[in-house]
Amino acid sequence: MSTALPPEDDDQPASAYPHRTIRSFVMRAGRTTEGQAKALAELGPKFLLPFGKTPLDYATTFQRQAPVVLEIGFGMGDATATIAQTLPDTDFIGVEVHEPGVGALLKRIGDQNITNLRLIRHDAVEVLDHMIQPGSLAGVHIFFPDPWHKTRHNKRRLIQAPLVAHLASRLAPGAYLHCATDWEPYARQILQVLSDEPTLVNTAESYAPKPAYRPLTKFENRGLKLGHGVWDLVFKKR
Image (cartoon, rainbow, N blue to C red; front, side, top):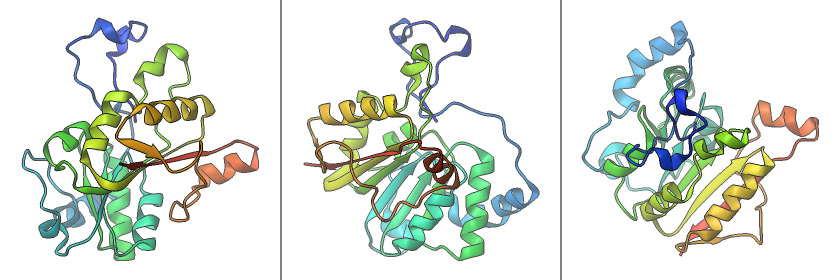
């Protein structure tokens, strides 16, 4: 998950494309399993929200009044499902473009009877533009976005100033933005970008302790055993 550049021009500076639209992802190959396809067909009509250009009415979507948290790029959805079950009094909207991940999380929703979670299969930037009203979110989660390790690809990273300002505009006063990464150079960049956004304030002096609601993923556990670090950043809307 990251901002996408035309593949044939990876080494060109971002300024070379003044009219390029920001996107929150890069398409990757992946096979949808039979179980995922069945979940898409059977559970999609209830839990998969169609992209539209009308702001969501959360109370209608979830049939109740509750705080709403948006997650961008949930991957296969393991952490998303766990968080939704851990925080039953909060409603969650997960945005992901890759069909296998959407199908996998729908299957988990059905298997575990998760009722406070809805999904959107679409570019998160357009979802923010059209479906999320300003000042309406209680939180945003962005966990382990693609770090784009090579210096010439850093411009592809998702967490950059324009998107952060856009996200901040959708947060209610006192709401939070929680990012996590296992790539230290990206953690430093995220910390700088979030610190530079005037409407956000850091909840810690630098990096934050891992909030209790965020579970350790299998990949993260494996990395920690190998001595790799993980950095959480939690900022709040002024």
